[in-house]
Length: 258
Image (cartoon, rainbow, N blue to C red; front, side, top):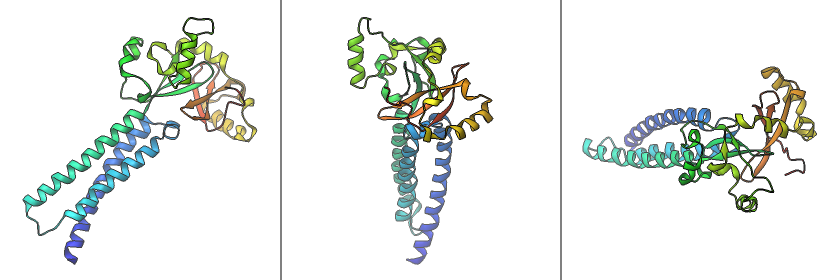
């Protein structure tokens, strides 16, 4: 009994180590490509990965520890290995699929804010209405996107507002997508001064770090709120000259405005 315990423990330990190494490779892709900062916080990428790791890394070694015995024939152990591998592979495929469907694909400029757009937010059957360069969802990380908005006097404005109130925001509708470059002037006009941010948000310290990495002063920067679903306590700091994001801060940027 004691010999079986130590043999099972050793084999399960090897299985655990292999699982951790595999998860490390997935982590590099997930956190560097699919969910780079700040998306692993905003879009719960870190939580989803931890769930995947807890299920997939733990399941295999536990089953190996329970089923392995040095007294089993190669055939019986081969059947056990096939069973364990199928269970672990199924959990891995399901977990990675769940992460892939929730990953952010666009950071969309939507008038007075940036909105995170995930794979799940976009109806696949509507992608054909998008400009050609956006008609397919790639496997890479989030990209900048512009969104064409309807003015109050335009036809369809009321319907568009109703859809937005029901959660179908303009950024989720492929027929509204345009290139971010075409809206840079609108981004510059919409930017708010950093002085509008709450005083407790350590603006001075954050600005010092931005200046060291980009060489930009406060006068050369602005911000817009960043939202995803119910999360509204982030902002995107943008360079006024090129209208490109330079930082993301976990601070409420609405200041009473919506």
